[in-house]
Image 1 (cartoon, rainbow, N blue to C red):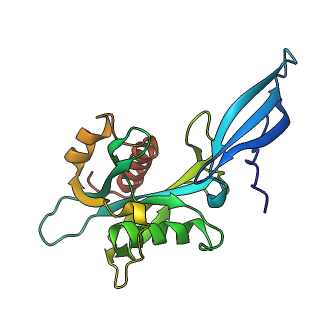
Image 2 (image 1 turned 135 degrees about the vertical axis):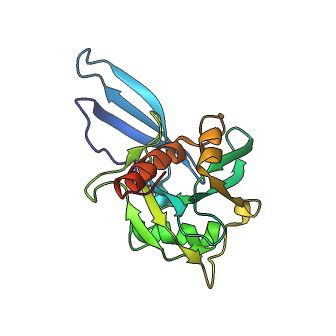
Amino acid sequence: MSTPLPPTFRDDGYETQSCSVLHSRYLTVYERTVMHPESRESFSYDVVGHPRASFHSVHVLVAHLRTASSSSPSFSFVREYGQGPNTLIWSLPAGGFDERKHSSLEAAAQAELSEECELSGGELLRLLPHTHPGLLESKWCANRFTPFLCIDPGAAASPGARDPEEEGLVVHRLTQAEVEEALYGGDMLPPAVLTWHLGLAELRRRGVAV
């Protein structure tokens, strides 16, 4: 079975002349050669993508608004190993969209909540329009992500199994002040930062005091 090539949402005049697989394991590295629309010169680039996840992931901000112990909201964040920086990082419950397992992006988000945070239910909100292709991860990456907000989920009766490499993952319930402190400390993933801001804006739109 051949490895899928990264999708092109629009080329803006940069004509793809060739795209081939250089390396494929968990992630795939492609060589993409494009022609510059003005100079008509060709340039080759390394592009990283995740074809097994349809080049798309979900990130979920979990907001706990109603708790018995506090009148202030708290938020579930994940502390896990980041293989790139080779250190512990802050992130949100997140994962790839696998068409073999997930019927929709919402289903992928619910699966990650169950597997990583042992949570289910609550109000799940997609923070982008359904027609949106997803937000870019980085300049050299073909992957995109869709942010979600989940309000007041409960404990999952039968949590999904984590992947073996996720065994060291720890879920922390943070106050807003603690999130703000970690936000720009240098070890929080950019999709988590953006999902946080979009989720906070939605909560404020609903009149939640955050």
